Image: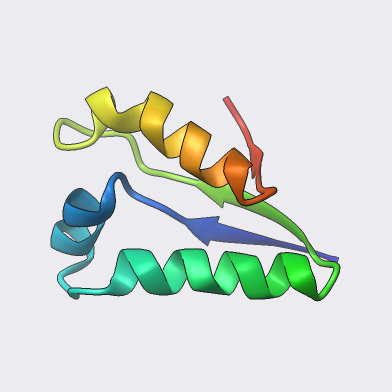
Length: 71
């Protein structure tokens, strides 16, 4: 089983794009719970003007949490 979690940038960018404060933290908490349960996790993002310069930071944050990043 595998699950993909959408992460749209750093905390402020992700929350702004999603329109919900705390959604970035919730997404990463979900990733941790899934990994802890033995589920293969990948992260995906929509690349746009607001987050295109955050991709390296986003990739580092996701791989630190054992997620697979597709490039």
